[in-house]
Length: 498
Picture (spheres, rainbow, N blue to C red):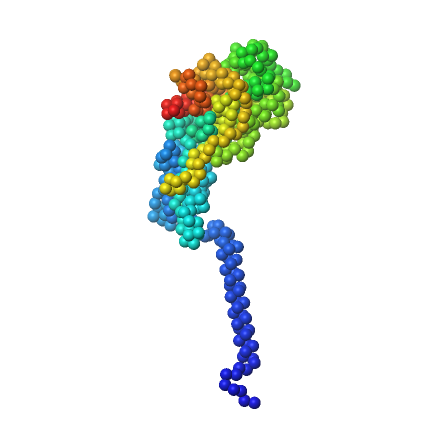
């Protein structure tokens, strides 16, 4: 039988259908693979260390500035290399404890880390028209971070610390705004901001430095607070009715033998060896025996509760940079409680938390959340987020806070804190000299916490400060001798501008 023109043999038609089906299957598989790569595996490819596109894009434009007192303390420098810009720090080590670092190799820390998305321009809040930005893949200019730091206070803190190993934290009591955050020895974050060999060598040197210049001692290091903790102990005793009148005799014995032991809690001054000493005199002379005894009389639970209201035992204290957890044990025997009540045993605090103690007393018993950022803004200055003061806890009543303010004022006027006195101002403070090391063989930590306001003012003091000197070549290693003058200079810097 003959076939008409155009007729196909059955085998050819079947082959054509199979080829079409195969092509369709290939198209489906290709679409599925593209979907898998572009959607389900996109994040993995984006974050793959071998993928340089995101890094090139990130450093292809200037990074947004961090500002202090309205002035940028960070910048961006053209490199002429694959990464077009690297971070710069015009003030070198001055603000390292505030900004942290941003490095093309080693990442970001401190505000450079917590606000990285805004500074790098990837924060969705910076987008003008989100849909168009997504289609065009256009990167937004980096935003701006306005800090709470007072430049005069920061400079005074760094000048005061000098070559000593130590830290300063200063807070505005009514708001919690951090006015100074200093740590020494410090470092230049710009020395390793790039990716060149010199940057890597600078990083290696800093990592090998036994003085740990990259450790933020104001936020991330805890120290036994010594007698500065007596402010917390006094507040707890007053809040719980163990002491009702700071000028009335207590029942504190002399000598005071630690409960359950034969060990006497010794004092640095023989003037403290007086039975039934009143609280005001005991604070002015910094008597261990009286405050240790009062801590035991107040009891572990009530003393710990007061400590925690000031910021102790909080593992999530963010400024937004997270601070290390300050410790006050909640399980101790009475002899350990006596030692903890004078800032020894396992009690340990960051300078930030001890500044919160001073600020809480100055703010009539209300402790505010510490706040390092005032505002986040776009590159044109328009506000992205405005920070507002937030109450942390009501540590003690205004009446109790007023009594502790009087105790601290007397310490400066008549006692161990006289080096913090400022003409024309009311200053309250407390010294501390904390022993540490095996058999207390280490150089003592010298502490001072304080607050100040213009004389005659009844307003909340504009500044509270904590200073710790962790290592010094000075012969007079005491809170009054080393730390109080630094606190005074920081307070003067703030009062001078208020």
